[in-house]
Length: 220
Image (cartoon, rainbow, N blue to C red; front, side, top):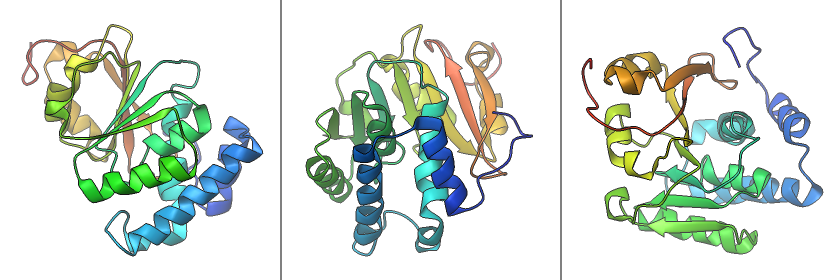
């Protein structure tokens, strides 16, 4: 993806892009539809997504999550989604890919929702961990994602122990991606490049591959 690509600006465009990119089966498409409905319904009970985004849910949340899979679709292995909240991007990716997915979320009500979705949609390859990341046992992740989890330096500091030399990092960072990346030490900066979001002209995604070690801040 690059900044010259068209932004998915409508619900029809978002749905069409998902179909064209991932060719989901009828079962997987039905899971996405049901998840979208559950997300809207539960948002009336707790603050999962902003009310202003409900009319553009497929652009702002479903396609926005799915685009991370498009950056990692030829790989396998365990995907670790940090601060999953309502399951974005983790549940969307799990439905489209079938990859083993670990959703990390510390808030009980959100975990209750995640578990309800996993049970209703029979997502046996999805694990929900209700705990702060600091308390989770270290395991090697093939892919690490985080959407609105923490500032980049703290995010990497907390999650570095889950990375290996082949780990793919997929970190949506909005319009501050380049600024946050500049705060990291040079070896860490060199792991990442910036991709333009398909769903928001002002947003960017930090994409990297490798194991992060050493000082997080400042120039090396």
